[in-house]
Length: 245
Image (cartoon, rainbow, N blue to C red; front, side, top):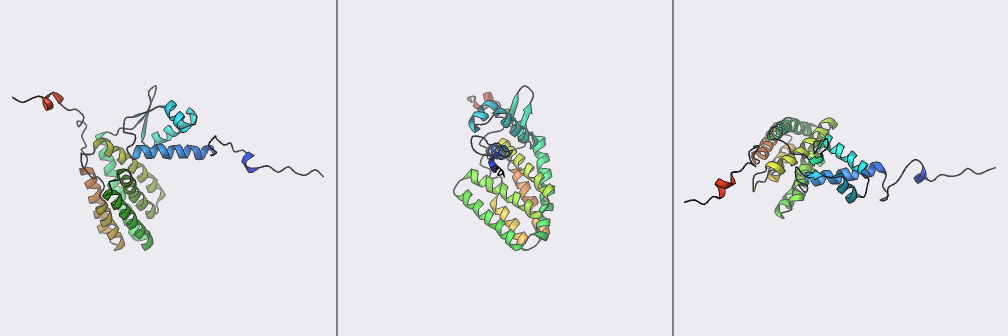
C-alpha cells in the first residue's frame, strides 16, 4: 500500500517573507513600529511618509506599506490625501479640545468601573507602573516617560473591562500625543506621575468619587500645559527681532 505523503506545516497555505514572518504578523509589526515612532514624537506631525522610503526601510513592498498607512489613517495618526500621499496628522486646536472633552467623559467613567471591578493586585500593578514613570522622569528619559504615561491610562481602560471603551481610549491617547507634540508649552510636564499616584491611591481606598475627581483634575492639567491656539506659529519676526531705539 502506498504511504501517505506528510505535508510540512510551513508549506500549507502560509507564505513567509524574507524575514520569516507571516504576512499578517509582518504588517502588525510595521504598524506597531510606525505608530510608536509617531506617538513617541520621533516622527513629528506633518512629516511626509513616503511609501518608497518606508518600503526600503522595512524591506517590504509598497503594497504592505500602503495597507499599514491606511490603518494608521483610520486611527487618526496619519492623513491620506489624493495625489499627495501620507503625512503624520496635524490635529487642529478645535479637534484637540474635542479630544480632551472626550477623554474627561470616558476616563471618569473608567476609574469608577475600576473601583468596582479591579482586584487589589491589579491596582498594585498600576502603582508599580507609576513608580517606573517617576524613575524615567528622574533620569530624564522622555521617550520612556511618555510610553509609561500612556500605558497608565491604557491599563486603567483594560481594568475597566469594556473592550469598546478600551479601543476608543487607545485612539484618543495616541491623538493626544500628537496634540502635545504640536501645542506643548516650553518646559511643560503634561502628564504628571504624582497625579497618577493620587488616582492610584483613590482606587486602593475604593473611593470612586475621589478617583473620578482626581482624573478630571489630571486631564484638565494636561490640557492647561498646552497652548491650544492656531495662531502659535504665526509670529511677527520683524517686530520680535527689530532693534529698539
